[in-house]
Every structure is written in C-alpha cells, then in structure tokens.
Picture 1 (tube, rainbow, N blue to C red):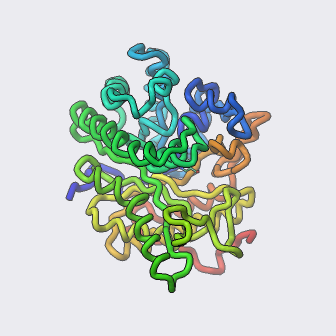
Picture 2 (picture 1 turned 180 degrees about the vertical axis):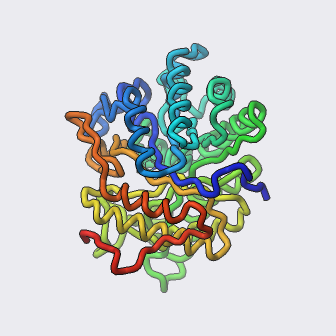
Length: 411
Ligand code: IFM
C-alpha cells in the first residue's frame, strides 16, 4: 500500500471551495449555461474570492484548519486553445503562496465541473484529443505550482459530472443520452490517467487522487430482494466502478459524502432521494451520518489512504450545521476504529457560494457571505470546528464527540 508521506501533518483538517463557485466574474461553459436561463441565478460576482482571497484566507486560518482545498480555473488559465494567460497563472501562484503563508497545505483541484468555452464547443471530454488537451493544461499548472503544492485532485466527482451533464441534462452540456452517460466516464478516466502521470513526472512525491461523490445507497424496502440488488448495482456503478478503474493511478481516494438515496426496483437505476419524514437539508438531502461510516468502511477493499475531500450541509440554521459536523466526525471516528485509514477531513464549504443549478439559495458556508455587501461573518459552527480540531490535532483515531450535555443545538 502507498504510505502517507511521513513529513505530512498527521491529519489534514481543511475546508474546501471551487473556483467557479466563489471566484466571481468567470467566463466558461457554466457562465454560458447561466446566461441561457437554465438556472435560477447567474454566478456573477459570487463571493469575489478571486480578489478577496487574502482576506478569506485570514478567516479560514481562524477556523484552525491546516489545509485548504480549492480549484484552479482552466478557462482563466487557457482562455483560447494553447494560449496560456500569464496573469491567471501568476494569480494562482500568488494565491498558493498566500495559502502556505497562512500555514495551510494547498490541495488543488484541476477540474471542478467547469470548462473553457473553446473546449466545451469542441465536445469537451468527448473530443478525441481531450486527454492531450487536459494534460497540456495540467503541465502549465504544475510548472507554476508544482514546487508549492503536493496534493492534487485531477477531477472532482466524475460520476456527478457524467449524470448531471449527460444523464439528466441539468448541467452543461445539457444532454440526456444514456449512450453518452455510459461513454463519458471512460473519457474522464483517460484524462485523469494522463494528468496523473504528468503530475508525477513533474513532482514524484506528489499525492494525486480523484474526489468521488459517494452516496449511501440502501434498498427502499429492505425486505425486497429486488430493491437490495438494485442498491448493490447502484453502489457499484456510481460509487466503486470509477475508483476500481483508477486503482493504479490514485495515491489516495477522495470522498465527498453528503447523503443517502434509496434504490427501488420499480425505478431501476434511478434512486429515490429520501423517504417521507426524514430530516432534510436545504438541498432536500437527508441527513444520514451513518452513511459516511458505511461508505468509508466499504472503501477498505481498495487499500488506499482516504481523504474526506467534502462533507457539509446547506442550512440557514447553524445549530443544525453544528450537529451535522459532530455527527459526521463521530462517524469518521467509528470508521477509524474499524481500521479505515482516513487521513483528512475537509468541510464543504469554507464560504457560502454559488451552488450550480440551485443558485445562491443553499448556504453551505462556515463563513457566511452577504452577497449584496460582500461582508463575511463567521458562523458559530466555525468555532465548534476549531475546538474539535484543537482537541484532535494529534489524536488517532479522532476523539470527536463532546459529552452529550455539551451539545447545544437549535434543532
Ligand atoms: O457544491 C458542490 C460541489 O461543487 C461538489 N460537491 C457537492 C457540493 C454540494 O452540492
């Protein structure tokens, strides 16, 4: 098994964002999609993180984390094919230097859903030369950031990208095609592999992985054999298949976990979001911490270090967020007690941000953003996160749950 770098902090405690969701003023396939009225809001200025990153990093450092996961925006770096924008590259270098000055380990995502318009117009990842285009872009990023950053996530949530863009058509390019849904995943894998080797070539000690969105699939009716089989198939196709394919080109497995969905044989391969009566987030997702433990334990078979690259909740009730954080970290600690090698946890998200087809309504941030004034304010959950981190810096496995009487949440 690939060992974790010994010079690393024992556990990466982090927060995460992605370029298009926070930067503001991007110009990519998503801004085109927004302009066509497919989604309720346009990302517009968003959080102006592109300009305000120093101020945001001051706040992020106050949360007590030792790592920051963010993405670099391909459309800024390569606005026209083969033309690399030195200003954008300088920007990400300056930002990464600032991340390090704030005593944060940079964890850099190379593709987080958005594409340069020229690449999208040529078919995006379906272009026959897509792996080569992606590799050329990654080369530029590594030439700029390779000496500063060790951790890279090549692709964020390949299966979500496939389903939303080519299955349900809710995201660009808006296709609803079973054939394309089936074919896009191997294309993404080819790009990942090419990027993986390119990164290793430039920095042999780099830690490279993919951030996978993993859902806790369970049978709608646990007494139905057909529902149980349907759940197993979904679990394989959505959760494990890509990980298995990438087994030899991943130094860690990135886990983005949010919720459970139910498999029903009457809706083959189309899961039901939740059952009546469940406590839901502002995304309409069930809160299900046990699912995280199950997902982590099921990943033991891949024998790789795990980074929880995203876990968080959209809510305007910060008490619920605090409970969510505690319950999910407790689930992580239960998984660790079963021998699962979790090496980091990143809360999604550092800041409130542009939530794709849901626009600005869902509030995921530990730091609240007033979009009219661009004022930031720390949520109380940020202080709770800090206290958990402070008491677990060198603790293995995590010792998360405070005594029950200390739990005060506005539920
Ligand atoms: O906001 C997204 C993020 O871009 C990818 N993972 C899930 C988050 C919440 O939906």
